[in-house]
Length: 291
Image 1 (cartoon, rainbow, N blue to C red):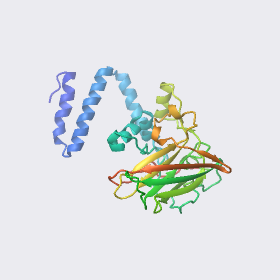
Image 2 (image 1 turned 90 degrees about the horizontal axis):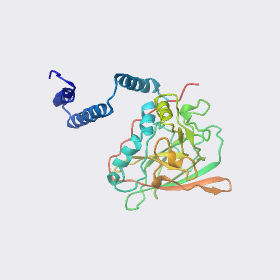
Image 3 (image 1 turned 30 degrees about the vertical axis):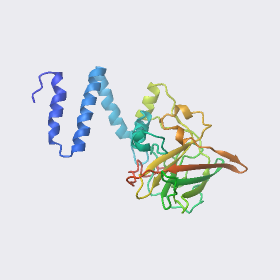
Image 4 (image 1 turned 30 degrees about the horizontal axis):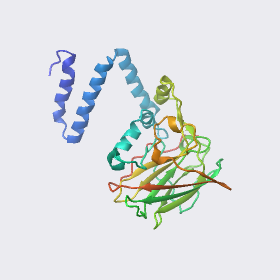
């Protein structure tokens, strides 16, 4: 199609979509073109703004390394990660769910741990934490033999992949639920932390005058054949950034209850799985930052 004016551009691009053999890919690309072109028209995007946008996309790629995923971080800061999560869980968004953002710091192949084992693998400050979890189906029946991947930041606000001083896989582990659906582990009470701001995500937050803090939380990924794999986070109800999470991840269903005990804290939480596809996600990062 020969372009006669700006009005022809969208139609010309969509016309070429018929060559795309996969129907879902064709649908997604067609919708992307329609909405992207509509945004450009509504915003009256200037050439300079377009060049700046291309620069931001390039910067996302430059900022992403084996130990840091800038695209995943930016998706969270725009609310896209949690929107997709809530649309695809909880009976397609019709009821509360324990599913939550995977986040940019999940690593595959964490060490397998015995029930009740500690995930602290190097000297780590902070109050001791004992976590008791249960995994159940929608009828309340326990799910035995589920793999539960656990990870968290240190009380200093860094995940082990960000911090050369922490041991490999510190504060990470994989547990298997017991016949009653339970699992437990020992760790340290997490603290809120700042997300990195040396890339496009930081520029976005600064432009909006938003802080870069995440409320204190623990991460979970639960996998069992026959059930939909979910990522989850459990949040500290006393964290001051609970309502202004820079990644828009806090939902009412995921606010935990940290109980003070003589030697630290205890936290109990129940996760509910839906029937569906058991599929482990591709890890956003693969290794630690170099010392």
